[in-house]
Length: 324
Image (cartoon, helix red, strand yellow):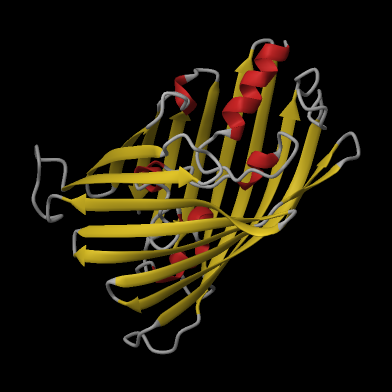
């Protein structure tokens, strides 16, 4: 039993882009980078956020959607190839039609240690509004917000660190704010204050405060079909705000969106990325991914692996996107 619990704690503590700091298993409440496309770019997505991943990555990005833009995405992840640890993510986002852009998302993290089970369900509502004056004037500024509700269900009999996880439930709420600045058509700056105030209230009576994570990044369009991005993250801790990770990503589309491949696919994208957790000397992790895109749908895939013999196993992500 202790060995099984240790496996769960190890896997979740090393989960991609999770900021450490919470003593209880509810810490993944602050996980981001759930989608297949963002993870294909090493998580460097806070300054892009131009699709259905925006409600989680940076809701301010929704304010820059085309007027009739509506997007949905689904991702299933087999974390570290462990079989019993998985994540499912569903998100919808739409442009501003007069009342502000908005999005909805659901994220589920589950661990199956038969007969014991553990799961987290996170429900997100996000909104965004353009603050800049004039459609053709730069820079353009948008503000986004994110409210979320979390529920944890655990049948684990006890916790390896003596914390509050043992055989119980928890519920929580969180608030995050995002900013997107288009400095010019090819250059954007994204900032996200994740979990400005977020907490979990356990059935045992313990209140767990989730530490704030700050994200800042730049994205630059080299051409109309190629983008590079970089992101830096830090986290609030007992000794103040400290750096936690850095991320690099790139994406390129091969077709022009008009050409047909096999009479069905209008575009084909390739992407890659790298990220390093600064408190983890495992050499970092590499992400590679691809997308096949038609008129209304797209199929996404990302493969992630560590550069050290001590790294956990490879993670595969499969995604389906729809544009309305």
